[in-house]
Amino acid sequence: MSAIYNFCAGPAMLPQAVMQKAQQELIDWNGLGVSVMEISHRSKEFIALTQHAEKTLRALMEIPENYHVLFMHGGGRGQFTNVVNNFLGDNGKALYLVNGQWSTAAVKEAVKLVGDDNIDQMNIVENCDGVNQVVLPDLNAIDKDYRYVHFCANETVDGIEIFESLESPWPVVVDLSSTIMSRQIDVSKYGLIYAGAQKNIGPSGLSIVIVRDDMLKLPSLPQSSIMDYSVAQANDSMFNTPPTFAWYLAAEVFDWLTAQGGVTEIEKINKQKADLLYQCIDSNPFYKNGVKAENRSRMNVTFQLTDNSLDSEFLKQAEQAGLVALKGHRIVGGMRASIYNAMPLSGVQALVNFMETFAKQHS
Ligand code: PMP
Image 1: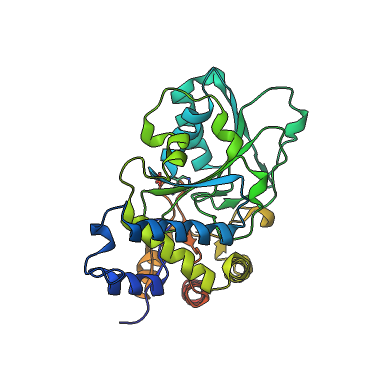
Image 2: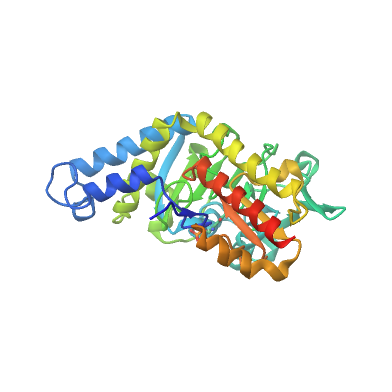
């Protein structure tokens, strides 16, 4: 079978080497004669795995000592809830910046939990001459006291990414679900970082939380223990049985990324992949993208066919060429190529070749 390139936004493709290793180890992990799925999370072998995973992630992201790393249940949306429950006790208020579908969904969840009066939202996307761009507000000029400001660094559906760091008088909480470890970020600028695993980390369901020590002292709302950051921290993310197989695969992905040269090296390749694809879109009137260059996502490249009556033909022929899952999110339509860390440059090259040929055939 010729190569299949999977551009799914999530659950996304995982590095082939990781999948092959997992396949080999599936029924006999670590010489134990059983799968990693079938052993106690409290066994010394599994504890060693979790310690290794944390150490590798800390090295990859250069996480300072005063931050805790938590492996939790509930994916990205689970953290929409947890952030509110953990930090907005005693009538605390928060500011949410909105730059697309996922930051909007986070606001919705927060409002549901603590009401409109405690959640302020601010749209940070402006449309200038038909092009969307992010304009970060001057938060220091706002005379209000928030427990935190929340934003989404990469809007997976809209293809809008924020590369600038946000200066804020309050702790910054960031959703890095679809951009974590794709580029270097300065962890020390954040109060809390979270990410659903199913793009750059591993299987869905797991979420990674990186939280600064002092954040755990903020007043919480009454909440279930399994979603409580302090409980997770005090119990090494094992208050209840964690998603062990997902944790194992995440550890393998961290090792794989380390072997690629870490975040610094993968960032160079990610830049190269995104540049190649955007160049193809920009140089061909057959395609368009409505995001300003500075805010174009490197992980989720959204684009439209100028003649959208050809959408289904484009998707059909792409699939025949082994290029799958290019359909844009149902809310925004068009196309989306998700090119996370595991997508090789050859996959993007194959897509660009296909797009050029398709355009020629239909112009
Ligand atoms: N935030 C972002 C940026 C996402 O892309 C997603 C999922 N695509 C989520 C949150 C929600 O994640 P989950 O489905 O794991 O709850």
